[in-house]
Amino acid sequence: MPVVRQDRDNRGVRAAWLIWTTAVLVYFAAVFHRSTLGVAGLEASERFGLGPAQLGVFTVLQVGVYALMQIPTGLLVDRYGPRRILTVAALLMGTGQVLFAIAESYPLGLVARAVLGMGDAMTFISVIRLVAAHFPPRKYSLVVAITAALGGVGNLVATVPLTLMLGSIGWTWAFLIAGGATALYSAVAFLKVRDVPHGTTAPKPEVVPFKKIWPKVRQAWGVPGTRLGFWAHFSTMSTPAVIGLLWGYPYLVQAQGMSPKAASSTLGLLVIGAIVSSPIIGALFSRNPEWRMPIAGWFLAFALAGWAVLLLWPGGHVPSPVIAVVFVVLTIGGPISGVAFALARDYNPSHRQSTASGLVNVGGFLAVTVAALGVGVLLDLLENVLSPQNAFRVAFSFLVVVLAFGSWRMLVWWRRARAAVFAAEERGETVPVQLRRRRWDALRVA
Image (cartoon, rainbow, N blue to C red; front, top):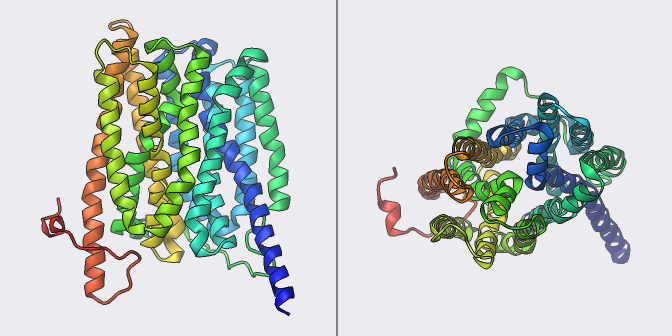
């Protein structure tokens, strides 16, 4: 009997990893499609005849749609299950990229990026819901971290390989192949993914009437842990995302004088750093949850120092090894931003976790939207006034402002969340993380 049970358990484990692998490939495609303008931005400017501000609108629109779709996505996953939502996501992303391949006008290009952003928005929450359903809680943080790392491979494919494809087969065929493959894969996701393990009864779908949606969102937003997750995601994710999604490649080519191949390779460091560090950080957070916020705080301090190096370097032309080191430091923000979802899960009841996860995800992409647009507008204003080096210096200063603002708000809500945990302990309630009081906890919260 034990042998039969062990064999059954092994089959269940294999099935869980197979389902996860099928689903994570959709997320892989999402990150790839999201990152394509990071290396195709200059080609897009020539194809559509755009200035920096108009080019920035592509990313702002795509990421803005992503952010706006987070709460609806949580509700859709609760209602229809992750398998159906992942299938629709793959179809939307494939359709959006095919439209982008054939678009020759700016308005159609914007429509294509909006469709792509809508599909992208549906992937990550669906995948982490599958992880929660198919893996035990002790493995949750590690599997989510591995998911993020493999998503980073999609970003890597969007750097050097996509650059080579654009140079060899051209814009139309490169994006047609990527979009068509993603749309076809939706059938695989529909057939292979299962919402719950075999033999397990799927939970009854949660149907939330429209009039109750806003109260549910407001309840999740009122939890200090959710607010902390929002600002942690806002501050830790924004810098590597803005560099990788849009402005890193033009900065390296136009301001630092790198060749396209060298710029793509340098951007690849952002991805490789995330791939290597994600499982390490995920395992560290899983074993030592009390370390999550101190690590996030130290990262932000190093990120601000890295920006100071890039922006204040004498003469403006930063040596390539220095850029590489700073980019490696900045890329760790992506894996660290996963702390936001752990906070949403830890501090909200199960029936509100998807809504809370959507809210904290909004934080990061709101920061990316604001930062990407701000950099584009400043570059547009300064391109005929300053040299490329100085124009990027001024424009990237806006990224530092966004980063500093998010860091301040994260610190404020870190203290407020700690105060809420201590108050719950005094009431005799169970708390998700055991914290040790510090002298600064007694200070008045801003």
